[in-house]
Image (cartoon, rainbow, N blue to C red; front, side, top):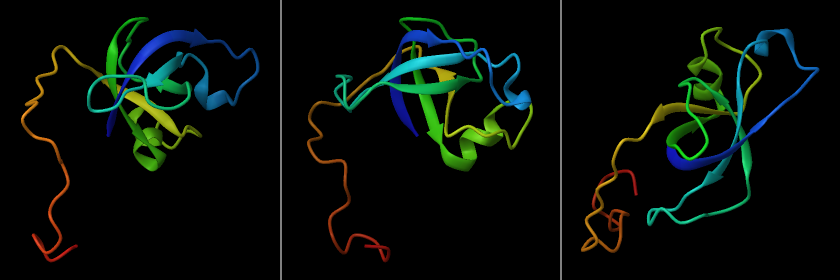
Length: 104
């Protein structure tokens, strides 16, 4: 899951029938400092978000499951509108140190 800011809408006159009625958003991905990170992307809207909103998004299978009709051919979906973001600036590294858990 990651954050993005909606900067516009995309319109597709021809699309797969499962996406009929699904709004497509143009989203600018954000880094942990809420600054633009990467290229603009198109996301299916599961939240009724609008331009200027910060949303959290999911990719892959989770994106396909987020819409009312599940298993649609989408790769990115906005699944929630962010009201506030509180960041503890004293934390510099969000990754676990090597050996901290049995998974790394």
